[in-house]
Image 1 (cartoon, rainbow, N blue to C red):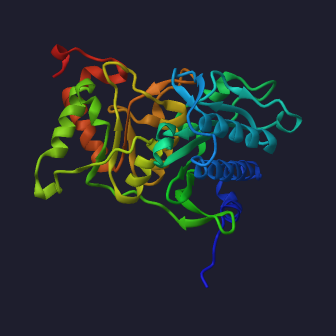
Image 2 (cartoon, one colour):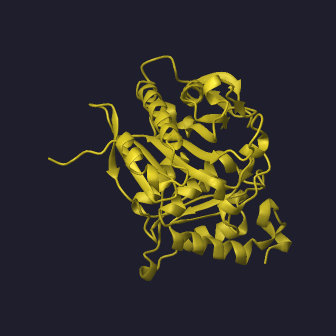
Image 3 (spheres, rainbow, N blue to C red):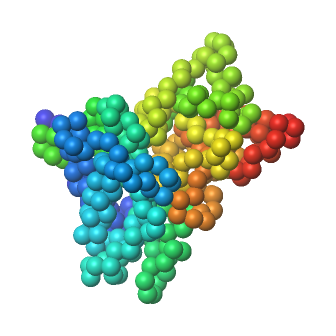
Length: 349
């Protein structure tokens, strides 16, 4: 009989791989796993109860909040607050960072940035959605934690992961020692190791982008899309276009099958649309640990400076060779659009 390794067992076994191995990070990851099970339960029964539809409020991004967004946000914050290992939660759904002032958390060493329910506009359509999280060590030593503790570069992450709520529910995470995936077994209520040492293929034949926005894309992205569509047997083109509209689902597919996910700047979003802290940085950490590449079209995502909680960025992420090729087109055709500055047609080489 095959030995089953649960998430809890795996975290404990790998605890010594972490340079600050005192158990806090392990407990923090455990708390996230518990909250994920609760959110998974609600996602799976969303069509049966009054939990679909708009909450009636908007988040800091100006987007309508779904009821399940709010529920997921509350569950993760509650789990992280009760565990005692986290002193601040920064959530996409909250205007400001949430300080955890409980007695057990006053000396906590970790900061968590989280997108509680990525792709929530797909819930009504029964399409996969997910949670993305990122963990940092606190910088300040004395007093209350500050915004400085939160606004750290992606290279400072000590762990990151995502949960995908789909045909099966998976938790995928890294602590900088490779990427491992766990599938939830509902019969025992445990995440079980199903995808050890995940590696993304160096190349792929799938590109993922919302081509409905084509007219608004930088010229480099337009040229790359044309490249993907040209017939060339040597490079297995034309590539297949697949876009789910849920970052977690699109990138999870890329890890398994190879591919590239692109969410570029547009004329209406000159700095990009996805959030650097809650989406781009954690996914970039995971992809790099799996052997892939993540860029804003010109620069490594993890090297970008973080200036605000809800900062946005373009992202090109996935199989290394595909991202490198997309960067070639960006540098050749959209050099004037680096760092979120949209160039005029005349300034594009």
